[in-house]
Length: 448
Figure (cartoon, rainbow, N blue to C red):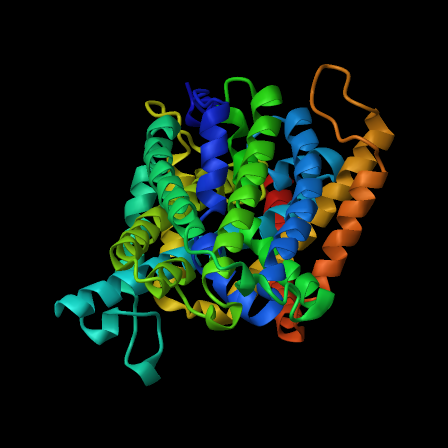
């Protein structure tokens, strides 16, 4: 049997997909973004920001669910656009999704490294400064050694059979869920309703701006669609996985925000660790330490889910002839695309270790929004061409109204982004265009 013909192993169920999605979604958003967003954007009205962002993500989730159910193949947005519009647009969707996963993985590894370096420095056993952060000679740093090491370790874990690789993700998610539940249950007793006044200190415009920021707290649910060829019953499990991941994460975000803004006046929440800060604010220092350690540990679930998704995307695009062929090889024993997995991990570790991500991270927002908009339009196109699915697959209700709503919502969020982000986006697009053209010429030369 040739390496290319070996199928991915089908051993994932609905629960695995839900936990994969939640592992990707619930991380830095709930432990970091909530505080700054409340302090600078929406105050206690941040719950409405989460509701708006959650509604937009739900509309997108409907589109993802129909496409995942229609086309239960590995590759997510790339695979769907390949079916709907051909190689050129599939490359665009795949290229932008690569950047989404690459930068999300690198930023999580970088954040994790910051926590660990701080912890080691506190114990007096810190690494030499040159190894503590990405390349910045002015600060005396050249490579983030801990971030690189952690990325490669997680890559090694993800190179195992999918079920085994995701077992750690599932275990860590339950720790994460326990920490969040602990905060909500204990925090309720310290809530002062007066802290919720005024409810909308920045008006509705603050709520809307908060929604544009918090949209990105939900990113990662699309990693579920990357697992399509490793799922026992994809038509049923993929839509369920997507909806449960979005619904549970939205509920947890809203509950944490309610308790957080009820414990601490929103003006004091512009901190890097708002959940732990709130517990320290009411003298629960032991619990605050537990939350901090738990947050560090469980950021790993985001890295596992993102690297898993990126590896499957590279594998799918290689199978389609849009990336080097060596990445479509599957390990006969584990049923895992090992070459694609290590390529994803090594590239991510280079980004994590050397490149300051502040300049690049915002592109993630824009490329993801554009891919989601493409998929919403894709649902309208495929319905017109093929009609409603009749084989029991999930389908979006009220087409074209729901996809049009999804497109308009996405456009609104896109126009909240800065000019610098758009300029960086044009650079990324140009690089992608060059790679596509070179690859097409190579393919044409080989077949001529």
